[in-house]
Image (cartoon, rainbow, N blue to C red):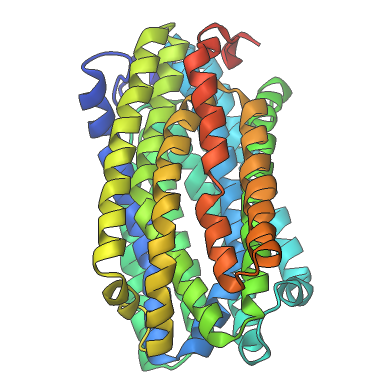
Amino acid sequence: MKITAGKQNVGMNLTEGPVFQSLVLFAIPIILTNLIQQLYGMVDLMVIGQFVGSTGTVGVSTGGEMSDMVTPVATAFAMAGQTFIAQLVGAKKDQKIKDAIGTFLTFMLILSILLAFLVIFFCRPILSLLNCPTEAFGQAETYLIITAVGFPFIFGYNAVCGILRGMGESKRPLMFVSVAAIVNIVLDLLLVVVFDMQAAGTAIATAFSQLGSFLAAFIYMYKVRDKVGFELKPGYFTIKFDILRVILRLGIPSAIRSLLVRFSLLWVNSNINAYGLVVSATNSVGNKIQKFMEVFMQGVDTASAAMVGQNLGAEKTERAGKVTWSTLAMTLVCAVFASFLCLKIPKEIYGIFTTDEAVKELGVLYLQIMVIHFFASSFVGAFQAMVNGSGFVELGFIIGILDGIICKIGLSIIFVYIFHMGYIGYFWGIACSRILPGLVCFIYFISGKWKVRKLLIEK
C-alpha cells in the first residue's frame, strides 16, 4: 500500500521556506507542549507543598526521582524514532516509514512494561539508595509504585509524538498534553485537597493524566493512519530487525546518556538530602523551577533536531547549518529571560511552591547560582540538536559522560570536599556541569564533519 507520509500531508515541510520562521513556527507548539507538561508536574508539587507540607514535598520529589529516570529513557528512544523518521521523510521513503512506525511502537510497548515491573519490584531498595528521609518514605513509596503503572502510557505518548514530530507535525502533541494537564489539575485538587490522599492522590492524578494524553495521541494516529502508514492490526505490530538495530543504535547511547545525567543528579540530590529537610526541600523545589525555566530551550532543541534530520535526509546540508545558528539565537534569548526572572524575583518564585520561609531564603541563592546553568544549556542544546539530527550517537554518548559523570559529579566533589563549600558546592557543581559539553558540541559543529557523515537511511 502506498502511503503519503513522505508528501508532508501530516506536518510541515521543514526542508523549504525561511529557516528562522520555519523553526519558530515548528518550535512554538513544542515549547507550549513542554511548558504544559512541566506546569502540571509543578502543580503536583504546589498542591502537596501547600496542603501537605515539606514532608509531602520531599516524598513526592524523591519518589518522582525514579520516574524522572524512566521518562528520559522514553524521550531518548522517542528522539531516536523522530530522528530516523525525519531522515526517511526528507528522503521520501514511504514504505520504510510504515515499517519503522510498526517496529518502533512495538518496541516501546515491550520496554515500558519491563521497566514498570522492575521499578515496582525494587521500589523500597531504590528509595533507600536515594536516602529518602524517614518521615517521607511512606509517601515516596506510594507515589513511585502508582506512577510506575503509568510507564506504558508515558512511552506510548512519547512514541507517537516522536513519530509526528519527525514528520513535521508539532501542533497535535500540544493538544494531547492539554488533555493530560486538565485531567491532572482536576484530579490533583480533588484527590489531595478534597479527599486528603496526599502523595497517593498526586500519583493517581499523574497516572490518569498520562493515560489521557496517550489515548488522545493514539486516536489521532488512527484517524490519519493512511497519511502516516499506521495500521491497527496484529500483523502490523511486528519488529523488523534492520529497523530495530537503527533505533537501538540511536536510542541506547542516548538513553544511557540521559540516565548518566539523571544518575549524577540523583547522586547530588541524595547527598543534599543528608543536610536536612530545609536544604532537601530547597533543592527539590529548585529542581522543578530549573526544569520549568529550561522548557523553552528544550522545545527549540527538539524542533531543531527534527528540522536538521529532514534537511540532511533531503541532502540540504547548508540549510541544516542555518537551522543550528537559528536555534542558538533562540536558546540564548530563553536563557536571558530565565536569568532575569531568577535574579529579579527569586523569593517570589519559590513562594509559589512553599510557605516555608527558610526554604524561600535559601532558594534565592539556589536560583542565582543556576543562571550559569541556563547559559551553558543554551549552547549545549543548540549544537547537540545538530548532533542528534545527524544521528551521531557516539558523540552524544561522550557528551553524556562529560555532563553526567566527569563534570557534574567531579565538580561537586571538588567544590564540596576540596573547597569545603558544603551543600552550596553541589549547587555550583550542577550549575557548571554543562560548560565543557557545550564546548565539545561547538567544536564538532564548526569542524563541518557533520556535513559528510553517512546518514542513518544509508546504513
